[in-house]
Length: 329
Ligand SMILES: [Zn+2]
Image 1 (cartoon, protein in one colour):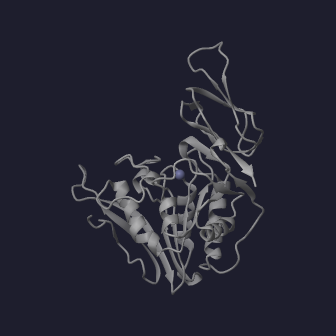
Image 2 (tube, helix red, strand yellow; image 1 turned 60 degrees about the vertical axis):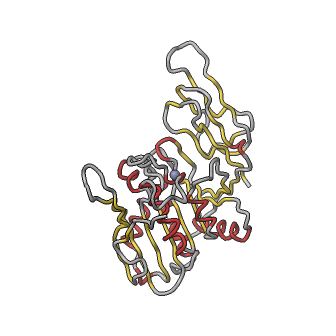
């Protein structure tokens, strides 16, 4: 295979703070020898652990980009030990378009790993992270929220891993992030995820779902800002102890946590995020959009717990994820 064509415009191991780009050649109609310029900041002070921090893996999720812009501007090299690599928008073309996936190739970054050096724009970015940046990292934090179509209670999460020592190290970092909820997350489709690539390289990995709806709130941004600093403190890169408040522990034991819609229609939420739910309780009704006088279809929880995620737009389609129930652990 060919070498990855992405070139950093700054050295990734220089001391001090450097702002630059990951420059990805992208020849196109409006720029024959043009490039995709992905912003990156590297802050380094001596020897120590490396943290790799990313937002906008999905381009319409905003807590990560906001928190990481602030960190890149305000964190001084003199106040750390080791190195912090900050990429506020991993799927930069998607982020600029305000979309979940890339407008260039429709690439969903979190289904494109480990990527290809000779693939699409999205696959080239994935390959650069998988082969160049993740191997240099000790701890990896990737921010997510629900994007335009989902909303979540704010949680940081770890996955169940075969290597229990690694799982414990990940969970300790997730607890240090200290979102209001802490989740052991079950993925419905883990193939191609950045998470999987990072975990397979044996790294400490923290991911989040901090809100959604295609926006960010003052509250969700505050959670992101505190969380990233807490993870850097936990890793020994920033001095001091993480600021810890109570966090509700949640688990997703099996696929019964998910409720998928089987109809197209107008959704009537019956529960809001964070509400307790019993097995068999109605989580939402789906009304017809094309007539009156017909009863809605009721959707019920298949587990007891709390509502941790819900479909966000007012209209829903067959196949959409309608609700996710988390179980207190
Ligand atoms: Zn996401």
